[in-house]
Length: 52
Length: 264
Image 1 (cartoon, helix red, strand yellow):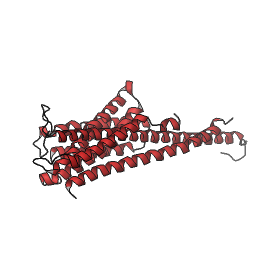
Image 2 (cartoon, one colour):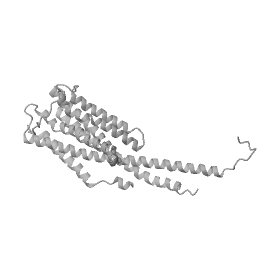
Image 3 (cartoon, chains in turn green, blue):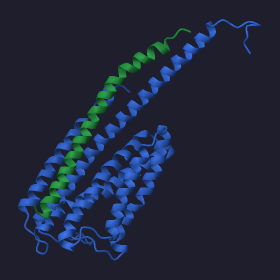
Image 4 (tube, helix red, strand yellow):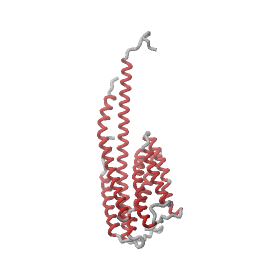
């Protein structure tokens, strides 16, 4: 493999890996947010509606 | 802000990503197969279709967004976590591009200069930029109140930005191995064939578009992380509040000890 091929492969490969990792991170946080949102409402409701 | 609002992605954003990938595909095709070998460097000049473009993103676009965002955050009239998140997103993307600048430069330098690395002013200041960006990302992970973290990171980003003019002018201020402008001279005369010039220009466009897309996705991650952090805080506070309420209720309903019961 020449220096040129190596340069293109490393640059494009790294950017591809970073792009995939970003998309996966975003998906993971989106899922976590969707899961946590009802939990917050459920947890907050009894505390907020505590009569005494 | 609801989860659905935060998860929504604007359509122009996808367009930028697609355009970036298409422009990159054309750059690679033109750079590796269509353009002629250079008169002096032969095929090694093909690395110059990507290396300066990557360095431009790492230095100027990242510097502009990180320093601009940090300044706008620190300025009381424009203070918003939007600017802080944008600056943070830009520094992470910048670290990736700075690392690639060093790697692609090293791959070009080995056959042309005969060394993988030398303590040249341009190379050293670029490596310092990468280290400072990694330091910024470490600082960002230190647990703190969002406003304190934002202020701390904004100051750090502005300190990092001092390195950017040093990198830029290093080839003028010091006698370096790294050359100054090769394709374009100070009079904006281009010293390359039209196919080489267009490929070079397209490389800049491709990496710039990809930078915008990376920045957007990383910004969304930052917003989601902060939202989860806020919700966790909300859950902890509500738990704490209900515990306190239970304790008050238990104390109120407990029998009051009378005189002579042994209570101190």
